Image 1: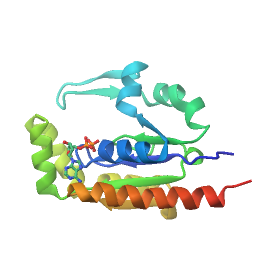
Image 2 (image 1 turned 45 degrees about the horizontal axis):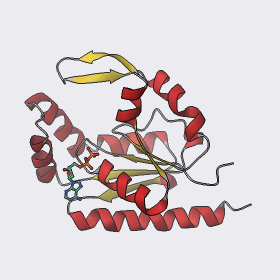
Image 3 (image 1 turned 90 degrees about the vertical axis):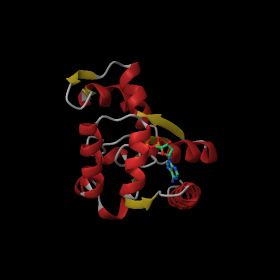
Length: 173
Ligand code: DAT
């Protein structure tokens, strides 16, 4: 039994996952787990997508690398995919959403190439991550939060903190 919940913060690249995860970790003491970093540290790659200029992650290797830690609870998992994580590990899935014009500017500022930019814009507009989360997890643990302005991050994190408090009350011995 976990005494701290595991929370996935997911969404299209650039929507604000890391901004949310870092502030939430700072305010709650839960641990921010950047899957990009874990994949790098444990070399969880299985080739390179030249067209998208992105390393392809070996999901089995990645899950093996994080399983022992995540099962103990208290992790904020930050990644642009969510359906690979077993349902039994996860207590809340936050799908961060962002206005597409703002997202375009953020991704351009990151120096994304045209193909990668287009792919990610399409994903946000088509609600790909929201759909993925709803298919992989029970509806009651999937929450969609908007992140257009800086104040949105603070408001969203406050909401998640409230949720954590309630979860802890409900999961006391
Ligand atoms: P992600 O982890 O989803 O790729 P991020 O947290 O790194 O996104 O944010 C991408 C950029 O956008 C970064 O420069 C911070 C900025 N940003 C994120 N959320 C924002 C918000 N709600 N308002 C303004 N800027 C935001």
